Structure formats: structure tokens, C-alpha cells
Image (cartoon, rainbow, N blue to C red; front, side, top):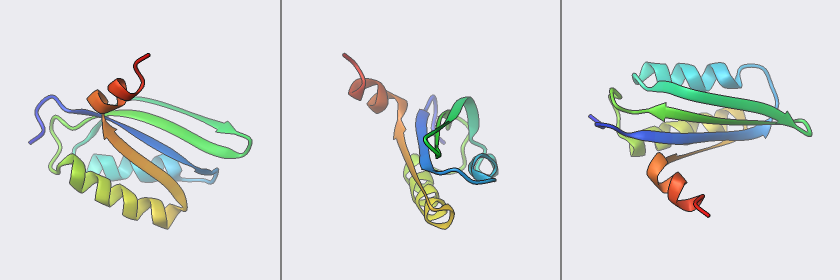
Length: 93
């Protein structure tokens, strides 16, 4: 559905059990592969960045954005997603 489409997902919020599990389970349910992941705790705040591949996904990035927004409200964290191309353009020096 989304040929050669990578995206960056960021998750920020208070640290609690299950954040990585919740997000990764949601992605797996839609055939979205996690290509890379990094996470840390900064002053008690959970911070995670994932690069995901939507090459085999059964939903669009916009549909995923809506699902992640709903999930973020349930978990009490902020989740954002943008295409890798947009992310790279925004972070170019």
C-alpha cells in the first residue's frame, strides 16, 4: 500500500510500564516494521524515537496518525509521526 515509505515516530511522556509494548503491538497489528528504535529517560520523562517502514502496512500514514493520536490519549503521552523525508528536510543544517 505504501511502497518504500519510512516514517519517524516520537513518543514523549511520563515514564510508565508498557509504553514500548503498546506502540509496538499497535504497529505490528498493521504490518508496520520497526527498522530502528532508541529510547531513554530524561528527568523522569520517557523519550522514544522509532524509524518504521510502512512498505507492507495495511493502513496509510494518515490513518496511522489517527490511531496513534487515540492511543497517546489513552496512555497519557504525546505521539507524533512524520514521513522520513519531511523529518530529514526539517533537520537538515
